[in-house]
Length: 297
Ligand SMILES: Cc1cc2nc3c(=O)[nH]c(=O)nc-3n(C[C@H](O)[C@H](O)[C@H](O)COP(=O)(O)OP(=O)(O)OC[C@H]3O[C@@H](n4cnc5c(N)ncnc54)[C@H](O)[C@@H]3O)c2cc1C
Image 1 (tube, rainbow, N blue to C red):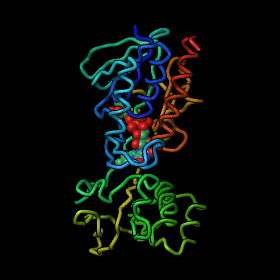
Image 2: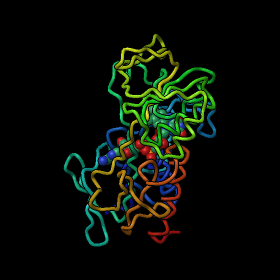
Image 3: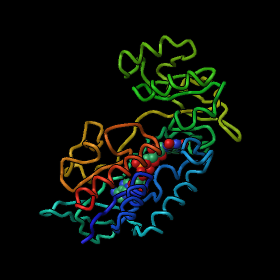
Image 4: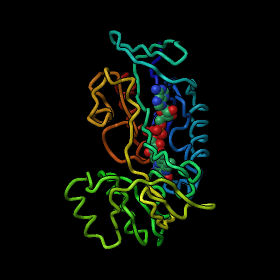
């Protein structure tokens, strides 16, 4: 019987592991198929306090080493299911091995949908991004494209319009799906141009993105492409266990789910911003809630 099993080894899960290990618990971290989480995908993190600039991989390796040195146990597998059994939980791993735990922390994050067009993978971290807050500053004074038509795409476009010289908002339909008030803000911005009924066929560049080619054949010069066509939280395996909102995010109250003993932290929660420092903070809060639940705080 384990005290705490943490599902996910992104910044939220590892921060929780650090706090729990320092309180005398031996947390077990099930790392999933991306040890280190989403940050492993980025070459350059410039908004994590304490590091002017650091690669995501280096930041996450340091965090993982820190958690391990403090006593957290890492298991390099994925979780297939979690079942409630009286006051405990039974966790089945991808190897079919089963584990028991008094507490489970869901920190499985989310993944951004990809366009699937030519050049997208090649120019990831070279102008193709899924986060304007993270990478927008690198396009200061240059034209950029945002792909999508929902609230996220519109918010990214509005944010970028204060940094970039021009924002092309590329949408596959002839109207935006975003809330009316957000649409009005977009239409009021002189440097945002909506490009309707368009899909990106190719992202073009040399060492970095230089342009996009649309299905109409039109080519637009841009220095960066921000993809905002949807995010999928990794909650399929707990959908019958905890309450999810319509987007699939876990509903929580200060990291506590409605199931006593199950906690949630990070991008997989239905609250807050999707940023590393916030996910770390949620991991800290979850650890402290868990300590209270276990009666050691
Ligand atoms: C390309 C990119 C660049 C970014 N740049 C920045 C930046 O510069 N600054 C910033 O603040 N934020 C940035 N972000 C956002 C940041 O990465 C996320 O907010 C943060 O990683 C969320 O952490 P998390 O721990 O909640 O989830 P994640 O990082 O998504 O980690 C989830 C973990 O859960 C594991 N997992 C999933 N399913 C299972 C399962 N069934 N069983 C076991 N494990 C599972 C995964 O393997 C992974 O280890 C970026 C995101 C991306 C995609």
